[in-house]
Image (cartoon, rainbow, N blue to C red):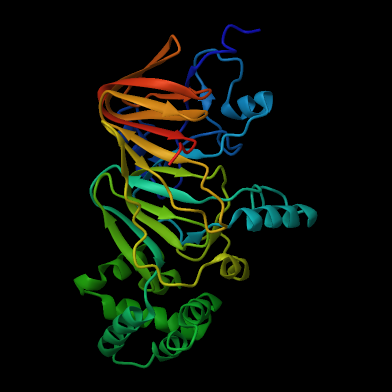
Length: 389
């Protein structure tokens, strides 16, 4: 047996994902590490085969995916550092049942995992929460009440001086206005093109509708520009959080955050993207109800520890993860394998005679449940299994 087999703390790391919407040296800027000189959008810390975290200290498995395969265990979450320099696609994620069925169906139809038109890359759900690491983190999340959408449409229609928005308004005014208005936009066509153009022209120079102008500059003519008017536009301060369960349509617009989600890369897109949009499947997954407030309020777990504990999953199942924010010396009971990363200051972890140093930018995999003592100051984030609530 390797001397590392029973280690409690294993140092991990990964290369940032270079998606075009990331900031130049974005992840490096958050973690205080050397940058790549290119866009850095996400750092994945988990076992997902798309980018499994790598061990850095001679562990018996080179990645956390190999740890899963050798141990027979499953890490029920994926932790990310996300840094957006521009809008991500409008998107939603499936429930566990929808993900399992969709993955099996696309496999049965022989669609390659790497195919651009594939919806389901794995059989797992992707509920997610994000905590802002800096003031000014912007996102779109959940549908607004129809009355508020119509008020803005009317204001813009008056400025447009044409009836180009009338067909969309009629759809929104029906008995199932959110679904009908959304479906009409994604169906596309000349009427949608005219409506989007009128919306953008009417919004020009109006600070209240600055987001429409910004999105039009990034994705000219995209129906997602109009969809954005149907959604809640939220700006978070550092430490504030959003909870985005299955069926919630959302898009991060700009800013840095720490994100915790199911161990999945299943994304059903709905605009603001050059990538594949499967409108029928997206509409099957979406929840067409107004969402007044998607903020996730942290709870005080103990001295210097706050917990971001999601509500029950849309499927009725418990969410298999929580995120802990540690700002000083603390005793922390971890209920299972966990991942910790320091974004500010420096910490040390100790338990069962083992220890690990976590200066800013360092990450560690905690291989099993443990009573851990954290010492230091700054911001330490721990993704873990939910404790007793």
